[in-house]
Image (cartoon, rainbow, N blue to C red; front, side):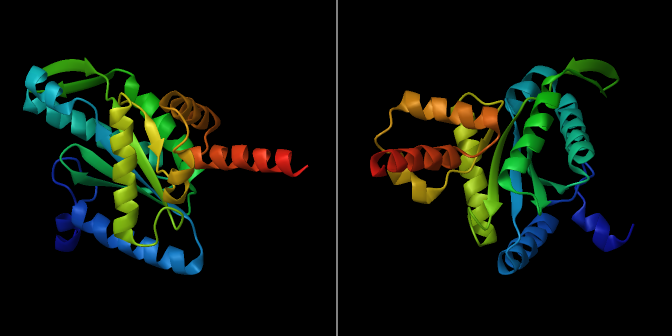
Length: 219
């Protein structure tokens, strides 16, 4: 491996590092937006990683991160590239993958991570799940600049954590936010659950509901 490659690789997990991610995302979003090509970004964060470190020790925590990196790389290798973003956060860059397909891919990974994984650290064997929360954003719909796509993925991850963690959440289309202001929290939660079940964005279902109302009153 060349010196340049080793500098771009995360020493702990073996996946590509933050610097390589920033360059790749900038190029993919810029070129994809100009050419009218879709792409998605998934921000993956371990749930309760600090508690895991405190309970089992940092050696086990490090092995958990390595196991999660392997799982992401094995599951996404045909469609995207995995990067360690920071601490227990990973980015999965999915050029050419629309948001709904990205949701299905990451939901499959999330379910696989829920299962207990056999790990060995500090000369002892442990069996632990790898619960994760995921926020997904797509270009050009959620942003036409790299920083906007990252921001929207971070916002989706925040909503995943706020809703109880261990789930995948799609970025919210900002132009639809004002149209949801008259919905109750319970209605919006059911909308999100239905969107997850159908594998589509919340805004897609909301648009369909609004279109149905418009057709009803226009007829």
